[in-house]
Image (tube, rainbow, N blue to C red; front, side, top):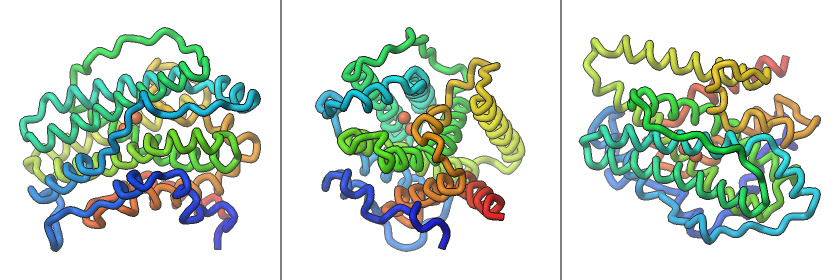
Length: 308
Ligand SMILES: [Fe+2]
Ligand SMILES: [Fe+2]
């Protein structure tokens, strides 16, 4: 068995999940039997998943535990807060702008919910920043994107990458004590929300593609490839400390890696942990929903290469 000490114990995260929250992580669509991807029932299923598993927490009542001086200074010196706040600000306006183009009421309601959750993440972060006296750079404006659908897909795919790594980083920060237990508890619902978002997004993409006329599919494939190219480019730039395009700041989590994990970062352990966490976070939702596959597949591939 691979790196057994790094595997997530099934109950490890459970200690930080309230009963209400745990119930929201198990969800099955009402219609019985197989559901064809791209069908109307599929659309209802992924929309309802997002709407019915919404966690109604209010950022204003979240607890910001008093931190020991060393924990506090580690947290406030993380270089991620500006990026994190701005990423949520941009995500919410992009998702909301796309929602406003939709005529299907159920789909629109679900995408609006997604946008509202992104806006709420920003509020959570602004409370954290206030509570711990973190100084932020002045925020830029968040204008609505001109190409609404492109911006929605760009946000969706970027979450597919960032959330996958965030799942592992979050658990790792909990284990190393970088995040004290109270803070883990406060952030747990936010991380799970990103799992729901990418679950929703990959199902939307599959449904959307199935429902477009065949002659539009090649163009769609080109656009998706272009998005992936830009996303990988951005993240490589961040990893090298370059921000040439000025857009590299879309990524939330990668710069935090070393800070959170210290020198003990073992890429194999980290990737294995991300995979386990990804599976665990997706496991409670209806098995008929598609799961994100590309990033986990690449991660498994990387794990095989690293093993040799
Ligand atoms: Fe978010
Ligand atoms: Fe999200």
